Each structure stands twice: as C-alpha cells, then as structure tokens.
Length: 284
Image (cartoon, rainbow, N blue to C red; front, side, top):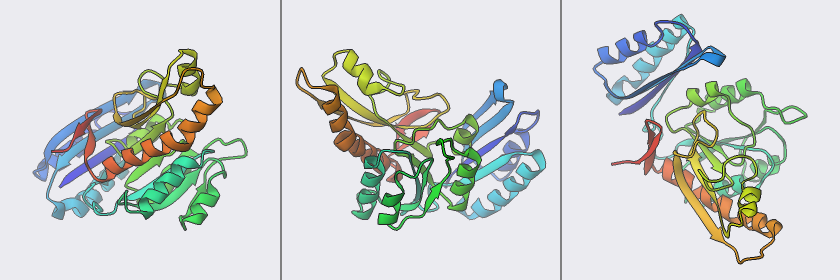
C-alpha cells in the first residue's frame, strides 16, 4: 500500500529522525522523501511516501500521531488506497459558480467517481450550489472574504477529505496548509495557460499580447504560486481576430474552465496521474 506522511510544525532540530526511524523499523520502502525549512516562517515541513502493508496502516497512523504529539508536529498519515473506489472531495469556491457546479454534476453523472464531502467558501456566493446537491456548506471567510486557514484545515480533517479541489478559490493557501496536504492532494484551477500566463489576470495578459488561443490549467498545488510544472490537464479555445475581451472571458468562464477542472479532477481521483518529487507522472 502507498502511504503519504506529512509533518508540519515549528522549526527545530531532530524532527525527521523519529519518523524515518519508525517507518524503516516497520520494514517500509521509502519511495520519496522531501524536507523543507521555511526560514521566514520558522516552519519545518516534511513529506515521506512509503510502501507498507495495508494491515499496518492503522498502527502506523497511531504511532506517528504520538510522535507528532511529542515533537510538536502536525502529522497526517494518508493513503489513496483507503477509499480508492470513492475518495472524498472538499470543493473550495469564492465567486464563480461554474467550476464547482461542473464538478458536482460530473460526480452525479459518475464521470468523476468520488464523493463531495463538503463545500467550503471564503464567501457565500456558491452556497446555493451546495444546497442544490445536498452537500454540506461551510463558510470560512469574514465580511471581507479573508479566509480562516486554521478552520479550513480543521474542516478538511473533520470531513476526512482525500483531495482538496480549489474551484476558482481566490485565496492563496499558506505554505503550512500546502505541506499538510502535500503529495498531490490539492488540485487547483487556474484561469490561464501556465506557465505563460500566471497571476490574477491571465485573460487580460493574453489579450494584451494579441493571443488568439486562450486556456485554463488544472494543476497540483505547491507553495510556489502557479509554479507551472505540476500540470495535470490544460484546455484551450481559439477565437477569431477582433474578438472582444468580454466575450473571451465569457467563453472561458462558462465552458473552458469547468471542462478543464472536471478532466483534471477525474484524472487524479481515477489515479491516472500522481505528483512525485513535484512532478506529475503517469501511474504505471
């Protein structure tokens, strides 16, 4: 069984040793290990991907949770094989209704074989979509849309979420949140073609560059915003010369972005692709 271990906490010495010692003592094969030291945040983060008998998953989770308690680390032990037939999704949204609506319809129509465990928003704009599909809605934003990131993490744990889908969720996740669900568990929709058009205004940037082909990108999240080399899927559309920017944005938001996100999520939950050493690879 493939198991992902993430550990995040205040930076200190000797934090990785007990984790590595435990899993190797259990006879685990380590397939990937990465450690991060974010000096500006005094943050330690670690990702370890191992192969271990599924019979030892519960025991491993309990033991590493205790190590986390002793070392002051937030440790998560997760396997994509626990709920491989129907993984649980958290769908995060802000304003745009089309991407979350497309994902929920794809789940309903069995195009995406998953369960929508919860919808989370930093604004209430998409609440009616959650209610339409009978999905729990949780608001984590204040009156100005500032998100409570600690509450977000708490909800992801509470709902036992396997994958987090950022369906035009217009907030940047802190590094600590990214590493708590590292290893290909956070899927983002960017409304431009990466790496050429990152940032908040990719339609406008492409239009200024006199582009005729526009698109969107579904990619795994890592702490570097729109880093671009974790691309799961891209969808494009071409417009005739002279097409107005408003029409380009309308086509992108109404059709291209939702289509891109659905296919990207489908590839991940079907386990066709995974993130390995920050690169998207096809599963054997």
